[in-house]
Amino acid sequence: MRYREADYDVVVIGAGHAGTEAGLAAARMGMEVLVLTINLDSAGAMPCNPAIGGPAKGHLVREIDALGGEMGRAIDDTYVQMRLLNTGKGPAVQSLRAQADKREYGHRILRALMQQPRLRLKQAMADGLIVEDGRVTGVSTKTGVCYGADVVIITAGVYLQGRVFTGEYGYESGPNGLTPATDLSVDLVEHGLEMGRFMTGTPPRVSRSTVDTSRMQRQDGDRERQGFSFMSPSNNPDEVGEVSEEVAHEQLPCWLTHTSADTHRIVQENIGRTPMYDGTMEAAGPRYCPCLEDKVMQFPDRTSHPVFLEPEGRDVQEMYIQGLSTSLPEDVQVRVLRTIAGLEKAEIVRPGYGIEYDYVDPTQLYASLESKKISGLFFAGQVNGTSGYEEAAAQGIMAGINAGLLLRDREPLVLDRSQAYIGVLIDDLVTTGVDEPYRMLTSRAEYRLLLRGDNADFRLTELGHEVGLVSDGRYARARRRRRLVEEEIDRLNETRVRGDDVNTHLENLGTSPLSEVSSLAQLLRRPEVSYETLAPVDPHRPQLARSVRDSVEIEIKYEGYIGKQKEQVRRYRRSERTRIPHDVDYAVIPGLSREAREKLQRVMPRSLGQAMRIPGVSPSDISVLMVWLERDRGRT
Image 1 (cartoon, helix red, strand yellow):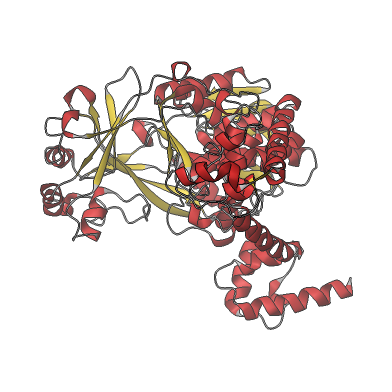
Image 2: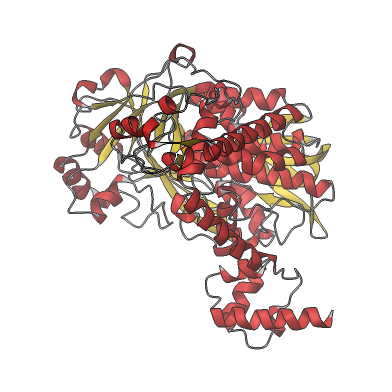
C-alpha cells in the first residue's frame, strides 16, 4: 500500500556526482529539496577511477566551481596528488588532474549534503514517477512511500537495469555490488521515454603491498600547490606570495608500467570468454577509454600499452589500474597481471568487470535538460549517455539551476558553445544525441582558447551570482581578480623599454635584441619570454598572485588568436540569435527533406544555429527553413 509522506519543491533521484550538484544547487537557490539514494554510504562515490579532472574534464570542474558548485572544493580538500597536464602545449588544453582519496571525497560530499539547509537526504529506491496531465508531480519508492514534487531530477547514473559481467558470470547489479534500479527504467519507458543501452568497464584493483614499484616509473604531483576551486588559496587574487609546499597536502606517487606481448597473447587466447566478444554484451562502450580486450584486438600491431597504478586513498591498500579495464574472467585477469612489470605478484582486491545499463536518449531533452515529453522532469549525468564524473556534475548543476529557475517562473539558464565547455556538452547531447558514451574532449570546443580553465570565473561567476549560487563576497573576489588582470595588461602595453636597457637580458634569454623602443607586452609575446623572466627589466611591476600573473601572460601571448576566436563567436551568435518558435510544425514547411523534418521535429531546435548542427539537416534544408522563418515573421 502506498502513502504520501511529504511534499518538496524538488526531488532528486540519485546522489552521485550529478545528483549532488543538482540537489545542492536547487537548495542553495531556496528550494526545499529531497535527494533519494539507493545507499547513503555511496553518496559522491567514485566507482571507477579515483580521479577528477584532466583535459576538458578539468575545464568542466572549473566551470562548475565558477557557477557555485561543489566538486572543485571537494577535490581540493581530499586530493592525494595534483598535476597540471599538457604543460608543453598551449593554454587551451592545459588542465589540472587530481588523484582523490575516494573515501574521503565521498565523506566530504556526504557532509555537504547533510549540512545544506533546505536539503533532505534519504536512503530509498525510486521505482516510478507520478505524472498528472503531462506534468510530473512526484515519485514513488519500492517501499510504498510517495513524495510530492513540483520538479523531479533523475540522476540515476549507470544503475538503470544495470547488469555486471566478469567473464561468463553475469548478474543484475549496479557498480560495486549495489542494487540496480530496474523498476524505474521500466517506468520511464511506460511514460513514453526512449531508452538506449551502453556499457562501460572497470579494471581490477590490487593490494599496494603486493606491487613491486621498483620495476615501474614513478610519477609525482607538482611541487607548487594548485587548486580547482577559485576559492582555494592558490587562486586567491590577494595571495601575492607563493603558497609553500608545507601547507599543501602530502602527495602520494602514481606509477607507470606497460602491458607486454605475453599480456596480449593471453587476452587473444581467452577472447571468447569475455562477454563483449561472445555476444553476451551488445551495447556500445566508450571509444575514448577502451577496455583491454578492445585495445588488443583493434590494435594488433601494438605490443605494449601504458598502465598507470593510482592510489585509491591514504589509508587503504587498494590501487586502481588505469588502462586495464576488462570483463575477462577473474582467473584470466590474474594471469594478465603476471605478465606486467611490477605486477607479477599482485593480488586482486576487486576484480574488473563490465557493466551494461540503460540511458535516456538526450535528444528528448531541451537545452535546459528538461524533458520535452513530461513537464518538470529533468535528467542529468550518465543517464543522458555521458561518461565521467565531471560530465555528470556539469549536467547536475545546470539541471539544479534550471529546476530552481522553473519554480521561480524565470527563463532557463542555457550556456552556449562560446560561453563554456558545459554549453558544448549539453548542446552536443540534445542536438546530435549519442551513439556511444559521450566524453568531453578539448577538440569538441570550437572556441577552446576562450574557454580556458584560468578564466572560468570571468565567464561564469556573474551568472552564478545572478541565480543565487555565488555569494556577494565571492563575486567581489572574482571581479577583483579580473580587474587586476586588466590593469596589469594595460600597464604592460603602456610600459616602453629601449634596447640599451634590455638587450643583454634578451640575449641571455635566447631571443633577438631590440632595434627600436618596444612595450613590455610586445616582449612578452615572444616565445622565449615569460612573465617571470621579464622581471629583471620590469622594476615597477606590482606584487600579484600567481593566478593573476598566469591569466595576464595567456591574454597577452595569445592576443591575436583570442581576437580571431572572438570574431568567430560574433558570427556564431548571429545564427544563434535567429530564434525558432517552440511550436513549429515542420511537417507543413514545404521544401524540407523527409529526414530533416523528422530530425527537426525530434530535436525542436531553439535557434537556426542549433538547427544547422543537427545531423541529417542539410544546407539546403537550412535555406528552406530561413525563408520560412522570414515569411512567418512577416505574417506576425
